[in-house]
Length: 84
Image (cartoon, rainbow, N blue to C red; front, side):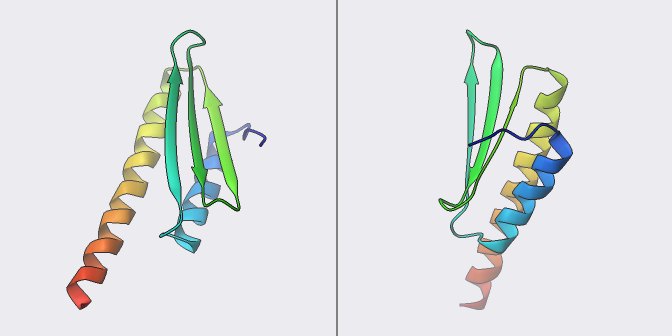
């Protein structure tokens, strides 16, 4: 599973993956203190997208994407519950 080299490519691919299969997508964040690396993985079991960074400025980008995906997940669920 190769890592994406640029954040923009990863963010676009992660959002697209979520929008194609919202019920199957998982997001995993891992931080290894000994390496100083933060890793984010977005997968639906068929496709696995990964990004790794050791830059503090990328933490804000990851946080922003994670928040955006969480908002999409909540809005989808609440919309589905209202129609039932």
